[in-house]
Amino acid sequence: MSNAENSILGLKLPTDPRWVDLASISLEEILTDHAFCEQKAATQCISLIQRYSDKIDLVNALSPLVTEEWGHFRMVWAEMKKRGYVLGAQRKNDYVNLLLQNEPKDVPQSEKMLHRLMISAMIEARSCERFRLLSENLEEEALRKFYYKFMVSEAGHYRLFIDLAEQYYPLETVRAAWQRWLIIEEKVLQELAPRGDRMH
Image (cartoon, rainbow, N blue to C red; front, side):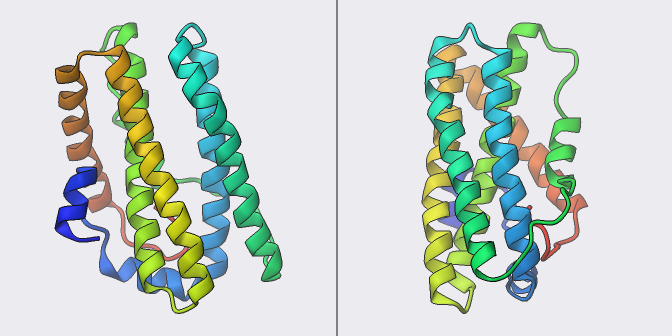
């Protein structure tokens, strides 16, 4: 992704170029991790709906996203089965866990939803960038097309979470929170060595 495209998403640190090279030789691992990421995305949407069930616009926006994310899991799982891969055991996501560790603990309850939406938007933005790298650099044309579709979806999801935040909080508050999370995400990436067996 070019600097201009990175700036659209707001990401401050491009993915290490070594990541896509590692991922291309670890397709079973990257597809497995991708499958679990889609599961977790659906689960996170359900969690937000349960936690903020009084926010009608949020419930309306995230209900179909649950279905879409689970559909994405099924797409990845179908691709894995076609290749004779197995799903294997669940694995932890260090990237997401480090983001969550930076969730502010001393903010009013009314602001906690804002940071949850920012974290979700961040994960989608980084996923979008990673999917673009795969769509441009994998040798297999079918997989390039496969990941191009995911890239487009993730860009829409990133925007959805930002838009939801802007419905419930002042624009200036959302922009300030997003800038804070961009800085946190940059530091998180700097802590993590590039791994070809992980989507993040």
